[in-house]
Amino acid sequence: MEKAIFEIEGMSCGHCSNAVKNLIEEVKGVETAEVNLGEKKASVLFDPDTTNKQAIIDNINSSNSYKATQK
Image (cartoon, rainbow, N blue to C red):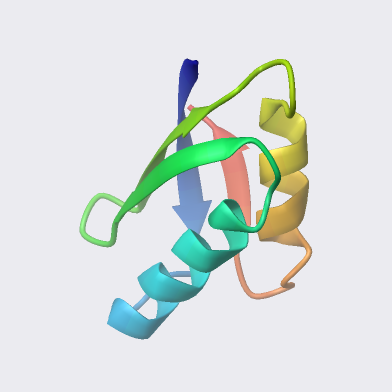
C-alpha cells in the first residue's frame, strides 16, 4: 500500500468533504480515504499496482466542483 496527501480546493462544508471522500473511494484500488475539511486535505491509502495518484486526482477534478493537487 502507498499513502498520498492531496490538497483539495473548493470544499466549504461537511457535504463537500463527504463528496470528495466518495469521489476518492470510487477509484479502484483505493483502500481508505480521510478528508479534513479544516485543513482542506485528503489522506489516501491505495494499492499502487491497481491505481496511481494521478487517477485519484483526475477523479476528484472530474466533479468540476473541487480541484485536487498532490501535496
